[in-house]
Image 1 (cartoon, helix red, strand yellow):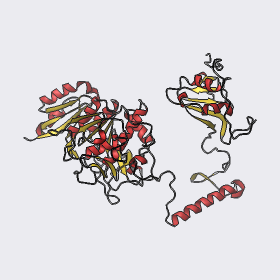
Image 2 (tube, each protein chain N blue to C red; image 1 turned 90 degrees about the vertical axis):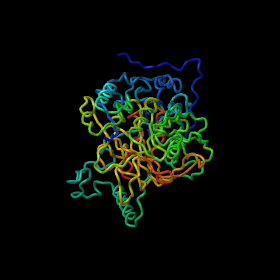
Image 3 (spheres, each protein chain N blue to C red; image 1 turned 45 degrees about the vertical axis):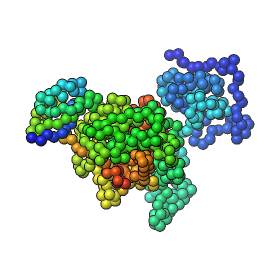
Length: 79
Length: 479
């Protein structure tokens, strides 16, 4: 099953327990790549079918699939 | 409560104050009434950090006895009573009100800069709105038109001065003439008057960077972009920290966009080839690569870059990047969390509004992540202060507004070797103008961080004729 890349943020009241929530996310099947303590955000990837399990972790405030952002190619005059 | 009035005379071992400088006023004019609209008292403004010594300074320079506003719980302005002192100091405001004669107060105006006195000006008389003397007192309001006098039952000349009516008539006629002939009504203070770009780019001129005494010294500015040409000759000797969040690519800029944005925000005062194009010329540069050499990247790399900037105590994060957003689409909760927590940590994120519009036919909403309420969204204006044709607009509610505008058309800045320089367009170019200027504000006052810094930028922005939807608070201005 293909994995989707995602970022997950925790509620203000759970900021101190980011590591615990990241651990729970791992147990739920997430491949945790980064934990950003100041931001209260965990990034990584997971199989699409396991997203619901991630949402049920107490303290998880939002889960978003990774967006691509960008700028125009180097040759463009509009950047 | 004992008054803390300071009545010490000038110290005896100091020379007496010099005689007042010559002025245009005739001798013996002390009894003259103050100029119209003023009270005869003076306001003395002190810079921050100089207020504690202000009473001593006033005493030393002009022999004034100074009371503290804390001694007058009931207020002193209404009565003019200063408790026998010559002046009252409002410590919290850094302002002293003095009733001393003009020739004594004048001594303060010629004082040297190290006294901490920023300005001395006459105290003005202010009125409750609508109660100005010389207006049109006693006239009833016209039904349905609050504030307009009802002239229906009176001979106008008998209740309104004819001069007033004549002026009103002339103003309306002038307005009619201008509009009917198609000429634009003069837009005082909102039209640019820029010099050539031989010495300084138009963008720096329009944002008043050359006049600023600040350089961003010791302020850390993170630019999350395509990296940087760290060997560019204009950046020799600068503090530059780098990190790449793009797998398999070093921070060296293989695109050009990042080098251009860093040039605008942090370029030198005297580049190898003029004109000057950089704002915070002594800021510490944190070049984070979150976009690949082909110009693309994902949320994960950007979030990692923001975390890196916070870890390194960067005051400003400049993000000339984004992804399109549909009308009605909400902002990212994850990025809003990140931005809000960054603000609490003293890091302000400034991002490009996006280039998806094709005005006047098409206006697209502010991009992700600039559409987050806690991220500053920057639009682009041209050198006539008009909204750039490509600049996105504040169409979506809940943070989707434009917060401020920066120069974004024909912007010259650094480009990777061997080209060295290039002029391009985009909200990507407007964003680092705001970021660099944010560093100037941050240097000017250590309390200008996070939301306070954001507020200072918008509060001091130059209001434009363009709508708030398109340029937010207006064109960013250096401090």
